[in-house]
Length: 226
Image 1 (cartoon, rainbow, N blue to C red):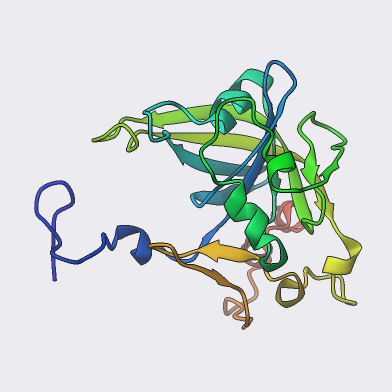
Image 2 (tube, rainbow, N blue to C red):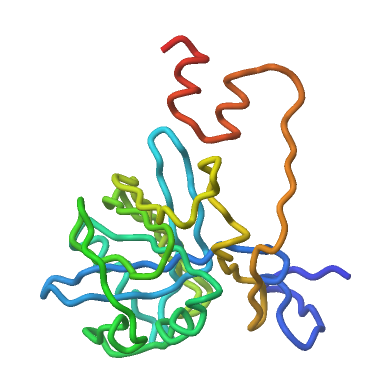
């Protein structure tokens, strides 16, 4: 089949676009507004952009009223946000925090989540989340949409602090993905978890290339002689 988004109809019972870009990590973002109130919301357009320095991004469509999301406004106003890893164990709280609520409502409290203080930024972390990134805001790219909700704000931040629960590491010091079971967004109303891992190492002995694959700034700099 073939269709042109916005021009021709796909003819399917549900739009397939989001189901073709899968799986997508969940971006569970905590922020603080100007009045010091806490906000927590999940997004499914999230990714790391670079590793030296570590930069991440999340993309937020506008809400159903055509307004910018609180997470975007808070990150821009305060200059900070925290990414919390969403896991199978906390899937219910993730779903509750996705509800569209009036500005100022604390999703931590609504979802029954405890807060942990951050060390470098003001937004709190989600207790029970095995990994969190404390981030300082860099900039926003705004993409106008074909509808009120279609407009998207892509927010970039530099990671200035990384928290990893010791229990989330293997004896060898690797993140134990199978143990912590992060969830990811599929399409429609579907999600998935990581339930298997396989390894592929790029052929050859290019140390810089392998350092980039690992995402190690120290090894990349050493390989480049910096």
